[in-house]
Amino acid sequence: MDESGFQAYEDEIQALQEEIRQLTEEYEDIRQESTFFSDEEIQKAMYAFFRETKGHESLSDLKAELESLERDLSFLTAFTGFHFTSHSKKTLERTKTRTVQKHRVSGKCHSLSFQVEFQLLEMLNNEKVSAVVSDLSIAMESIGDSNVSKFVSSMEEHADLLTFFRSISTYAEWYEHRKRTFLHFKAKYPDIVTLPEGLLGDFLILRNPKVPGFELMIVWKIHFDEDGTTTPVLDLLPKVPEQVMEQRMVTVNIPGCFRSMIRLLGIEATMENLITVLGSQK
Image (cartoon, rainbow, N blue to C red; front, top):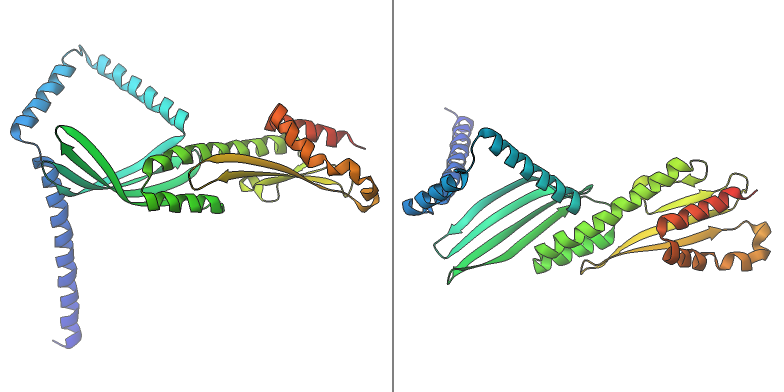
């Protein structure tokens, strides 16, 4: 047999050895999961389970309880915006006093996709359990916001999983609110509102076809600092034709008036009034 034939056999043997190694690790992980508890603890858990389910008189009771749990889950999903699509874990170490597991969680917060990986150390001390998160890695859907990237890097550096979930929920809520608002006004005033960057952009432009050269740009940024604080920041940038530049005193205060109206009326009402006034110009 020539040398190339031997090499092919060696490659196949190495591939089989690697597969055996992976299967052995998976088996050990499953075995640790199942043998961590003693027979006495398993019997106690089974007894507690049967004792809790003893009160169910029929299958219909179990079905009703399941439907109740599904309603609770649906409420929590709607309330928080989180929808988890997958979760996997691997036990790296397990003793009677400590457990180290690697977790991977994927899902969406409103329309923003994310995936987090982290190690969780659980320690038992005097019947009290403490948990520590480490090696946090976060991957998020790219939305072109550098503030989000800085925030993610800060959360990874400090392994602050709780702040990530709490803060990204608020950010995603504002992100969705901006998209819905832009879509609403584009559908209601298609001849006046344009979205150069679509619904994912952070600005829209208002133009009155009857007033050529004059336009208003509403910029809606979502400020997101490294601590996770979310603040919507809106501004109005007017573009005035040269023939009316002599009336600059009329236009200079437009941005300031816009911000004052937002504080008094709110975002949607202010935009509605602005579009109505612009559309009435001839």
